[in-house]
Structure formats: structure tokens, C-alpha cells
Image (cartoon, rainbow, N blue to C red; front, top):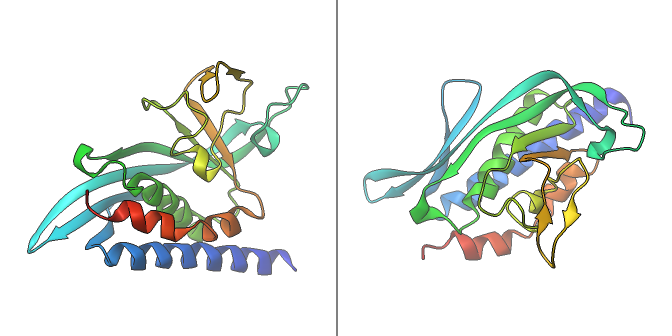
Length: 192
């Protein structure tokens, strides 16, 4: 497959995931709207004629960021400079938490950027959440992790070197996102 075909395929897969999320949310009177600046989105729930903001996400493209190859710290300390997607803000209103909305917003924002910039292979964010030291949280489920060494403190807890998390979005990343079990999300989407 040529480089141009790979780019076209990556854009197509990202667009399919965006469409899948839009269709799934629509079934629950939810939709994502784009805010005027680059990659900012709001999750809106429509109840009768009123709209309620359930959450928001803001992302930017950082140029020439130093990252470890494949998001893993190497003994050599080798890094390279690449453009990365950086999630600057992700918030779900308390009354909407626990329904996978944050995961949907994160995937949605990443895929929208990949439609425009399929050459990007890394995404970063700072995890300041209450569950940032847990092995399983919103970010680990879609392959975000620490690129630096961490220490396991217990069955599900780690000692962190900071809030920074990184995701390597290699050739199979969009296939991985596409295969996420949407039936799991449907359970969480339903109002509590």
C-alpha cells in the first residue's frame, strides 16, 4: 500500500469512528458540537426542548514535541521530535459521570484531528483525575499510559512520576478504536 493510500485509509477509518459515535449518541438524545476554535467540542443532551451541556473537550496540535519512540522510555533515553495531539481539557459534568461520555469525547476529538492530520502518531494529556494512579482508568482503556517508568504499589495502583500520559497511535490504533465493544458503552449511556 502506498503512503497516499495509507493516509486515505487512516482518514476513512477516523471518519467511520466519528460517524459511529454520532449515531450511537443520537439514540440517547445526545450530540457533539464543535466550538469555533480548532478542536474544541461540547457534548449536549437534549431533553424536551432544552439542551444541557454534559461535557467538553479541548485539544491542540503541538509541534516538534519530544517523545520516546512508540511512547516507551528507552534505556538509551532516545527521543524524537514530532507533532502531537495534546488534550488540554476534558470535563464531564458530575451528573453525567460514569457513562463513558469522557471516553467518547476523547475518541471523537482524536479522530477529528486525525481526519485533518493523519500523519500524527502521538497524543498526550495530563491526567489530574482522582483515578490517575490506577492501572485502569478512562485513559488506559484507549492506550494512554506513562512513557516514564512507574512503580507498582499494589494490585491496581502505581506510583506516578507526574500526570503526563502519552498514546502511540500506530498502524493498528484506529482498528483498535473501531473494535471497541459499543454494547458496553450502550449500557453506560443510559441515564442513571
